[in-house]
Amino acid sequence: MNQLVATIQTFTLPRLKKINWVWMLIIALPIFLLAAPDDQAKDTALFTLNNFIEILPFLALAVGSVAYIKASGGETVIGGIFKGNLAIMIAIAATFGALSPFCSCGVIPLIAALLAVGAPLAAVMAFWLSSPIMDPSMFLMTVSILGLPFAIGKTLAAIGVGILGGSSIYALQRFGFFDDPLKVQPSSGCGTSSLAETAKVNWKFWQERDRRLTFKSEAVGNFLFLAKWLTLAFMLESLMLAYVPAEMIANLVGGQGVTPIIISAVVAVPAYLNGFAALPLVNGLIEQGMNPAAGMAFMIGGGISCIPATVAVYALVKKPVFISYLAIALSGAVLSGLGYATYLNFLT
Image (tube, rainbow, N blue to C red; front, side):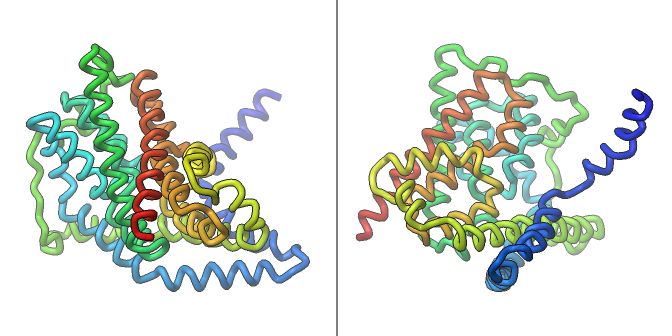
């Protein structure tokens, strides 16, 4: 019996790991909706297709921008911002984090390398917090779905949360906290040397074959990544608009004041799928009565503390740093929501 179980695991587990559950869900949802009494399968398909076509120019620009940065080697200049006056370093790190092309999980190897070569935790935390909230492709996608004011507000919130986190960590370090933040120190073969050495940057990447291949690989990979999440998000938005009563949304997170903002920041942790997938969902929620400031809190809190990001952070740093990371994420999300509410009130 044990031999049979072992044989089944040998053949099934590797195959299960290769299955992309997002694509599977994209395929399964329309099939499941065919059993619905109405024409929701057709409505969902048309809604998703129309929205995807509308966003395609922004998607192409976003994918091209990130691929260019990767192929040219422009991301290697980030290591240089972690030198100098710590207060200035925190502000610069938070700004670069919001402008860098790293996602919440993709930034983890860079963070490990920075900490391993002795970069200050306060500056690294500023970069770590702001990076998953905003990047060039996220900005373009946010403009196309939620508008330029929301995109600018989210960018400023990303920088603000990074500065808040870096300053908080610096203050705690003054009292002797976080002297040894990493659970496991990366070895010299994990990429730390790339930060200590000056890597060549070639903005005319097309002059080199390897860089052209990198551009192609990054463009295709990022397009497929964004396409699958946006497709799923548009499907979910269609179902939400069809089946979730607008009155329920309005009653939960549609009012004024701090309560809807706090609720949105808290529920963002389990509900947040992905930064790009969250954009259409938040847009749909706002159309159904969600307070835009609560939407901002949802985007900020979820971007930092979504399940994939928190798992990666927990695996890298010790518990006090991890708890501080979550506390800063929650407080930063609430403050961002309040700040955006103040801005909207000023406009009106």
